[in-house]
Length: 102
Image: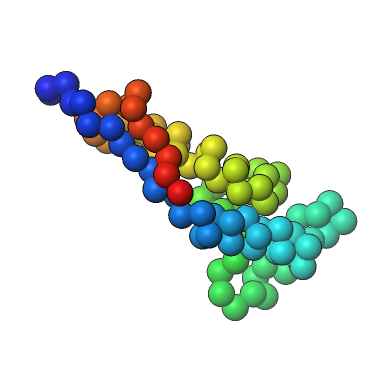
């Protein structure tokens, strides 16, 4: 219950985020229907789980997933989401001093 002065850093690897964003863009082009979103059937033909399917399994809609073509969307979405989860967990740190590194 003591006050904690330690900051929390989010290390977001630049290449893996860029690769994931590129995969979303590629999957959108490769499997896209007239609206630009891959239909459920097309994704099930992919042997390995696609980036699109991974985000779908985390509860994102197709309309939200398309935004992840932009690497900055990953940086703007996941660190604040992690802060919320870590606060709920009860992690004690100085959130005013948290930062993102790449």
